[in-house]
Length: 176
Length: 274
Image 1: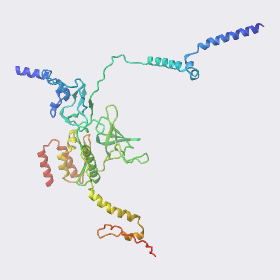
Image 2 (image 1 turned 90 degrees about the horizontal axis):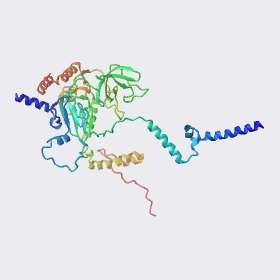
Image 3 (image 1 turned 90 degrees about the vertical axis):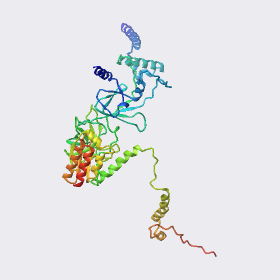
Image 4 (image 1 turned 60 degrees about the vertical axis):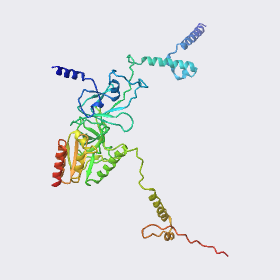
């Protein structure tokens, strides 16, 4: 009988203690994910703001007056390449090293081409010459795909120009 | 007495900064401050005359100005750090221009983008140590050659001459050079061939010889077949068919710094005869 009463008392005390313990859960525990599933968004936001406050207060900062940063328009460069147009460093004369001579033309021309950007691009080949080449081009390419029997059509002139294609002789159906 | 006093007073008052435009082509000394053209207009007449009213008072159009070698930024002005002649170049497009001091020196300081001739002094693991005449040897990785892979190593030995350019060159770090451009092509960089002669000249002479309208190079090119490589660190490598021709060429290039154009023409004509 006494043991029962004592047991009941203990259980009742334990319950109240548990109820007290519920309100006294630590902050770290409350911050855990499984504890926050039950909270609404407002309480979540409040908790986040509190955290941010704590973190930002811990940050160190300089206690200086705010200086206005002047935007400077002077750029410092230590290289002479910007100042003077210098030629390419490797040079060869009178055919001593042909590769270097080719390089010289290439690099110095590239260097000059960068300066002269405003000039219009000159045509390497004039329009007339282009048209002339196209006439013979059709024949040359056609020759590639022609079969042996058709090679007779592509006879070459004395000058090497290809004659225009002659009309092929097709079978004419007799009219009755 | 009065004159001396007035001269002295002028010298003290002359600490006032001069305008950069007014000093172009003249000798400047370290410590001078130069005003840029916009500031010159503002501070010029000293408020004693009438100043034209500008529509946008207060907001001056700022043009980007580049200060090159020999000059430093000091607030809104340029501070001279080397003695020499002040030069200016107008820009092609964009704002401002370039100001620099045309000075003379023998000691080279590595600058990013410069093409230099270096001598390989050591080979350690994956990099070569290359002496370029600066305070530290530059490092050159074996992968920075055209067509180099981990299996296909370039054939570079200690003592070889290398023509390359700097990718990293500042006062805080060891300079690094490569023999390849940003596209991966060699463009003439790499190991310089056999024979020939390497010698050292002043940095100003190199720039003078590499100027687009240099008469010396044009005249030299007419003598006999030859090959020259100029490094911005003051080193020149020359090669001709015989040793005698190579030595003549080296002597001419070294001496032409201190010759007048008449003396030079005399020497060339004598050479052409022989």
